[in-house]
Length: 107
Image 1 (tube, rainbow, N blue to C red):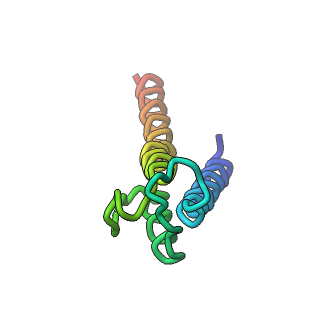
Image 2: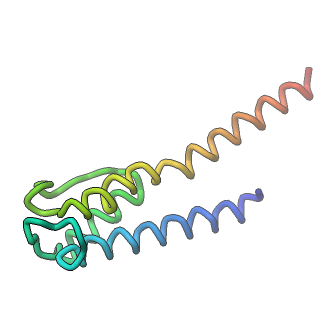
């Protein structure tokens, strides 16, 4: 994969992840797994949390059980926390593999 193709893949991955996470936070009142009938998050809280989990900062500025429904905690917090490091791990693993190949060629 070329660097340009990798760039566009990571950008698409981050954009889709950010948009879907923000949508979950801003529509949680109408989604399932909301037994406390919590209201939707404000746009600025949804933006901050979605951006935080997209760039793998994991900065949380809310009280979990009183702000986010179960659905939002699972699909808006846990899934992005698991997926956001994947692009960097993939690239790091690929660079390590390339370095090993290069060392073999030199030997």
